[in-house]
Length: 85
Image 1 (tube, rainbow, N blue to C red):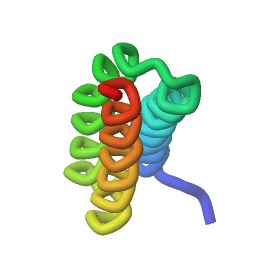
Image 2: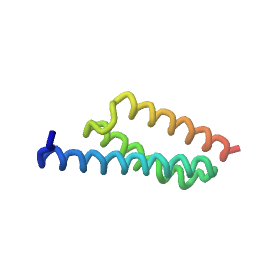
Image 3: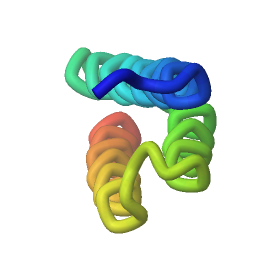
Image 4: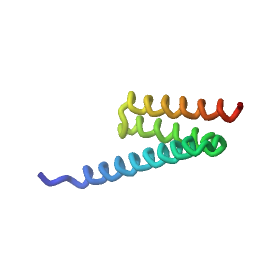
């Protein structure tokens, strides 16, 4: 079945949003893995915002987005506590 023009546009937007979220999460995980607390702190807010926007635009399911945010926050807090010692 052929796709309509509106479906193609929606698919491209959804794909772009998904890519933006995945890239932000990947950068955050790299910063945490490297032990760079300042870079992770700078990336935390934009990453959370990108996940929230993806939830709003139905790119991610709400529970999935919240799970990502929770795990990233736990990892960041662990890194922050290691840096404080």
